[in-house]
Image (cartoon, rainbow, N blue to C red; front, top):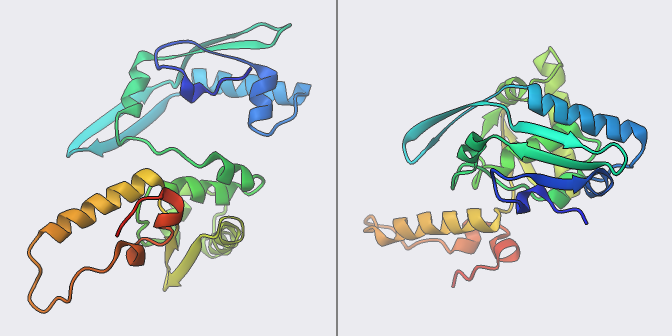
Length: 226
């Protein structure tokens, strides 16, 4: 039975059968799919990844390969993948975001929509960003910004149709509204609690209820706010 890699402790071997892995990601189990899997593992082993992030005011830098080694049995198609010890630094608390796998699978065949899904899922409250910013960050091969803007609007429309996300434009800034994940909802509620504990300014009529500023909170996270 296939065990998802995230269930394995870091710094250990991750073992899985190619058939189970391919099925889990919605792929067939033909020769082409196995070749793609093998080539992907090879690129992860040979490639160099540079990641920079800040946590609790401290900047971090990671540089190296995601996969240390991998082996496969050609007949049984059993894979064994090991990760570099340093990879655990990328999985420190608050340093990563778990994506909704069912949502990503629903966007299959729409690579730009999938990229936007990954990007905006990392934000508890997505802030406005420009089309030029997204053009640069996506690494889009589309050279002209006006053409990319059309692709961007189509991808955002896909997110709205498939996931119910909303996108609004103001000049060249786009704002995406989406229900927060359970952990993001807890983070937002903690911030609201901190603000609520402060002294209100004169003339304020009180705090708005959480359900008014966190659309979809009760539905997605089942956290009581009353």
